[in-house]
Image (tube, rainbow, N blue to C red):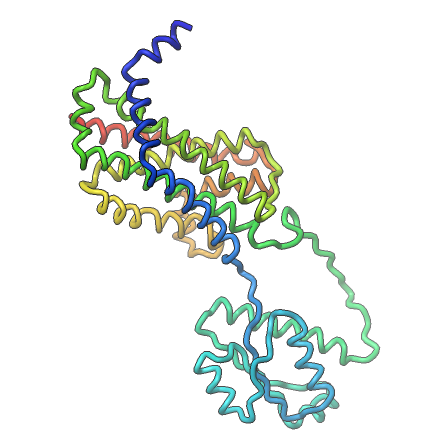
Length: 373
């Protein structure tokens, strides 16, 4: 009881109250903590999707027989390809692909019936490969559709000797938002944590109140800690907001321990806040803070696995991504939410997160202390 009374009477608590009152008076900061995370989570959760649908298809059917019409129907029976054009010549089809009016063009030759009779028919497929990812997926879809159609043409087909039974773990419906939303949660906490903490400290420098803090009977670590603690509690509201949107809007499962998720998210917030304070100590204005944060945050996001799988990166960047705290936090979030694992599986990521928190806090405290001196 006496210890608590001493805390409330200490300069540190006075500084904390000052920071809380300053935050509550700053309506723009409250809006920044609520609106952008909500918009980003909803936007990325709905938009980011590796699946490709509604590809614009153009077909020239020179054969015009029932088999060729069934093949075109097989291509357009799902939402992958949509028949947009039926050109009269290959030149017109090629021009439409070139102009971006079509994504895929198919030419069925006139001798298609004779080729079918020989059990070896060929068709020509044009694919707009400006977007290499979309082109690769479209090519795979087209091959699968044609192979499936081939099975219907072969009379008396027998079952293959090996029949694999595939089971999808953790995401049986292959819902893409279950992969992207946990990554976007880490992305949002990184951007908001670094920017809010950096702008808060730089504003003290711009308004001249940082010099006034030096006149208070408080140690340098108390001044810095009084800035970190209120921000950490405030940003935990963003964590709750993010997990609520993830589970309610996108139906992302929560299979793990909520206290573990909350504790590790709090630790990552200290990483983001420390990074923001470090940016503030090397910046002289709020504009400079924003520009510098883009230089740091964008590489963190790109090498974190939030949007693109780390396995798809070049080997060098896969190694460099181990130095990215956001990568470890996203691995933790996906492990807890989707797989329901604990510290026995995530201990390496947790140790890395602790190391980043200690190192960045130490650096930011030293640089802030030097600036106060």
